[in-house]
Length: 415
Image (cartoon, rainbow, N blue to C red; front, side, top):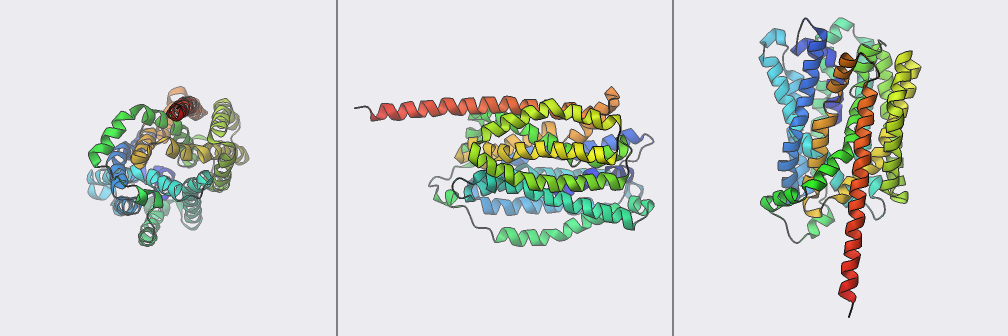
């Protein structure tokens, strides 16, 4: 649901900009749209703190129902807001409110689901289980891209611009009742039910403050995930149409293939991380991203074509999915159990708010500022460098803590 709406907002950014943010300057109009898209991500840290603490306090199942209700409210609002021509400044204001509601909910959505899956996983399969949270998002990308393709085939461009772009949002609203039924049927995790002490909200917040270094390191860790995901999915249609001057259909087909590629690689790499460990995959694929992201986009922009764009995006998809398959479950493992949802969600939300969510706007701005169409590749490489640094920090910390614990146990056993 979350990724379906987020992708639609990115894909139909040009139509949304004309409907809610009209301007004589196309660049300025598009930037206002992407800034509104990014504003929702600024609410994510707040959602992570308040809703994450709520889930750690009352349980995974109840919390996930609350987040869905908030997400649904934001989606319905965006789908039914009249255009600027009809209600003036109230239109962009309501769209912004809808994005803020979605952002507040999404702040804990991924964390809540990832923690739920990690606690439900059978021994030795956490990576595989948790990877399905990200893999499920790819279904949203595939369906949204397919809907966009169908709309562009069946409708004239003028119809799409006037009202056709709203159709997928309406379909998103129809999904909500099904999701409520699914979440009401969830079982609470055994690990949560067996916890004898349920920390108060105050205890959770104090623990988060005490672990601020860990949360910041976690934020750097998942910056690679957030930037690469929004670059290869949400921004790809706009990049293909506005920058590479390819057709809308070409951009949609590429995005559709990226969704399939992500869906294929994520569970495989999650399972592989269960076998070889998280650290080797994180080091390998962050290094590969640093070395190849920008050169790949340079090669694409030198002679833009459908096949080149497909090849480059599938390579970036492989890098993203391979990293993410190990990275998300790693973040659930480094967080203290009493603040697992809140800590995970805050780290992820900060990364999304500061890096990933504004990726479409940053990519657009970098191209305008540098006049270099491949500049988004530098942004992805920078995010990978953050992920590499965080991996070294977190696993060095884990090794130190492991040696300290082993020493403590050995000392306690000494007569």
